Image (cartoon, rainbow, N blue to C red; front, top):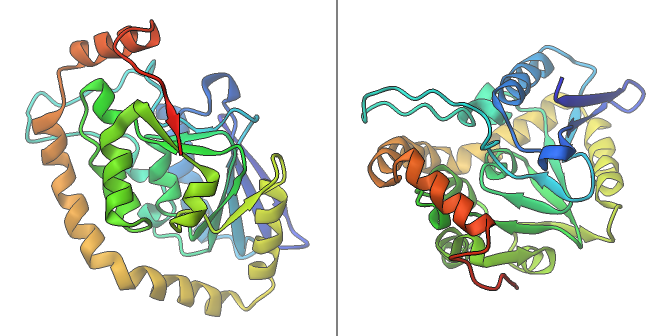
Length: 261
């Protein structure tokens, strides 16, 4: 198992932890399948009335897709299989409120989860960035999710700057991505406190409010996400060229100083 789930029957809160700290909580195919299954399970569990999602360790919330995972792709450019598409709660028709507790790095495919949480609470050590363009990949799904939560110019800057720039927790709070910044190590407790409050309210009222909030932007999001597979198919470099860029940058070539703002 690559997830840890702690349920508190007394409060109605479940804490879901991505438990791959040795891989910076990157999502492989097993983790993706576990997440999708867990969200569907929660749909049928009336004892879980609010959820916190977080990452194990203090280095990362999630660093997206595990690049060591083998993800088979269709031969046709008209078909794109993205294993992260179903990892969020809304993708699995779950309307129980989800709060994200973020510490360390949150980048790339992490936005599939963050983009479907109701709100984010971040440690002062949290940083947000998207590496796609640095490695010859289109930032499509991630940009759509973040465009629902951040001003357009901030999304564009993060999506285009790649690994060269990281958004600090302070700046993320200033632009509305993060609702609360805590001292390091206190983000989970703060998220659980909020979740306990939500779990104490009548669940039908809470879930109806969640559904209403998402209805306000669902049409635009659905239309934008419908374009994402084609943009990825057209704009991504071949996998071997992506791998070379990744290796070059990890080896110290082709990268500049990372700016945190």
